[in-house]
Image 1 (tube, rainbow, N blue to C red):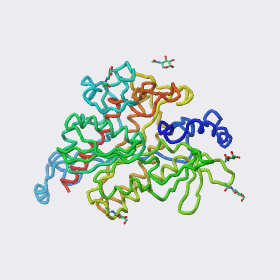
Image 2: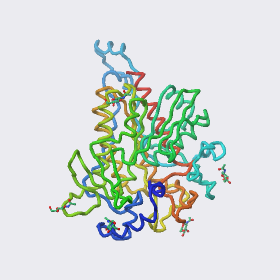
Image 3: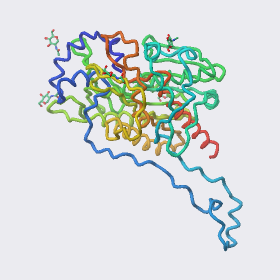
Image 4: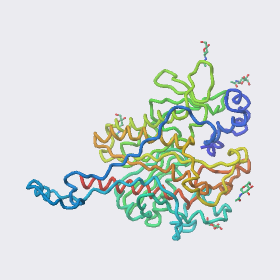
Length: 445
Ligand SMILES: *[C@@H]1O[C@H](CO)[C@@H](O)[C@H](O)[C@H]1NC(C)=O
Ligand SMILES: *[C@@H]1O[C@H](CO)[C@@H](O)[C@H](O)[C@H]1NC(C)=O
Ligand SMILES: *[C@@H]1O[C@H](CO)[C@@H](O)[C@H](O)[C@H]1NC(C)=O
Ligand SMILES: *[C@@H]1O[C@H](CO)[C@@H](O)[C@H](O)[C@H]1NC(C)=O
Ligand SMILES: *[C@@H]1O[C@H](CO)[C@@H](O)[C@H](O)[C@H]1NC(C)=O
């Protein structure tokens, strides 16, 4: 994420570089900085056709073995008696947990900045001066069913004896930090490992023999920043057919991999497949094929899931979850041009625009996920979807905004990450629902 940039390279150099970059952009100059540094240019919507994924909803099973829901036929033939022997409980209709709206929740948040002592400074919005608290009193309500409230005990029971890794950028870390707070209400984990930049981290819950990791990866696939005169250029060379080994090498050890990506793709990217450059995103060079962000993200998710499906020494118990793109909410500007996010209530369902690029990115992710699931399930791999995009499009009020303890160049708002506590905690409710669903499927098969 852009906030990490300052640690990597001198920010002065980066701003000096801009003069050279901007003319390459087809977008107006004001977007130049934004494209390179910000994860959320709310302009650029790719034109590549991306029809939304049809919601997979099985009609309730109406076969012979569900005859108990039908009124008894007045004239049953002898054959009908046999069916009484394989009377099964009626299959529950799958509810789409990801389509719904936010409703008032009088019970409030799961933790506070005193009951969870590990909230990172930059997500501790109240400590950093946020005053409004109404944004804590909402719960996600799927249209057709109820999403159970997070239950740390059930979560820890399911993952007991297991290893789980969040793989992705700083938003993945945000999710992991939120889960840590949620679980801490039941058991406080030990810090086992943390690198100097907080990119790789391992926690251990001794009572449940549960290991929780975060593995840093900006793109999931191999991505090297081009250096120009010894300074990072903000241009990246991506290898669309090769996952980053820094996370992939841990895979054989992991029982639950929760992958996510997206925010780093909004910059100049050169895409390579093997030895060949297949094109670029935003580079606008005469002899390089112009591709869009959707394509780059699609390739990254595809390569990742292909790697997972092909992983020979991975655990047969490995469950792969995809957490879909989490939108940012800058208004009236971008992160570096005074954009802010100071709303205090969620949007209604009708206020959300599903034509936006965030929804397209989500569709790309879900399409690739469904494709890989189909292939992987044949080999006994397990999958789960944590589709937060629609819910989070409705939460412009969930970001730190100016309340993230910003000391960098003063005044920038963080409308990308999420306050803790806050709506990011809902991701773990959807996550737990996916784990439960998988556990139930495992029991009945
Ligand atoms: C918790 O938030 C309050 C404001 O609600 C703030 O005054 C306090 O410093 C915070 N405490 C910690 C430990 O972060
Ligand atoms: C690298 O630095 C040299 C000397 O300062 C300069 O002439 C050259 O244009 C720079 N190259 C790029 C690509 O910025
Ligand atoms: C574009 O093509 C020209 C002529 O074939 C070549 O000289 C140049 O290096 C190419 N540019 C890039 C960026 O590949
Ligand atoms: C898994 O397989 C890869 C490639 O075959 C190998 O490099 C790696 O050491 C193996 N890991 C384990 C834990 O066996
Ligand atoms: C949000 O911030 C903008 C710019 O600072 C300000 O004009 C507006 O009044 C603020 N809105 C609220 C609800 O605080």
